[in-house]
Length: 211
Image 1 (cartoon, rainbow, N blue to C red):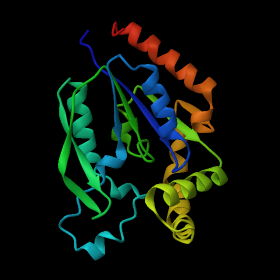
Image 2 (cartoon, helix red, strand yellow):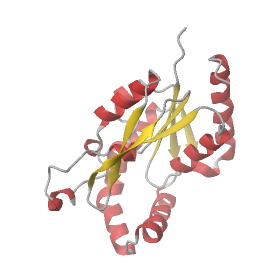
Image 3 (cartoon, rainbow, N blue to C red):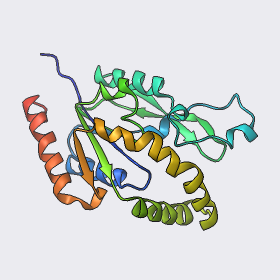
Image 4 (cartoon, rainbow, N blue to C red):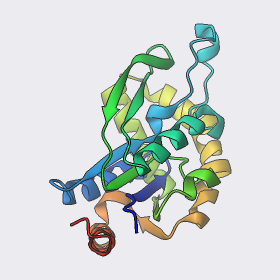
């Protein structure tokens, strides 16, 4: 049987800890053939729109993502072909002219808030995870991140959360939990769940003779 990479999807709301879970799994397999693909890199190119229109982008809506390109790239990686991963420039709210060379690996971790929303993406995954964290923790984490790392005011973060992030989470992200094979409460702090996932992935890789 022809070898095919293992695809692990890690979904969850903004501030849920999905990135911490992804990095923990990745670090556990450091030295092996593994790569990460972040859905955030695949926001649609908006260079054809005036800057004022780009400022209105709702980054928490499914239509903000170029899933066609993401699926095309995943299918190439599944055939062990390299891809040029796009880079998104949030300062101008469109795709950058630069790209990142991504070489195919035996394990692909796909991470993003809405990776389970598109059936075509779900069909490419061997394991689907949803990181489930209480809303109060998610807003606190987002507040700290956006103030410290992005220089935003507390008022602007809270306004965006109430008007955009929370309704989009309830409408689009939370419902995708039903597609998950495994739900991980409390994100990167759930070491038991992460250890179980690492063991499961090791088993799959051994069955495929990758290790």
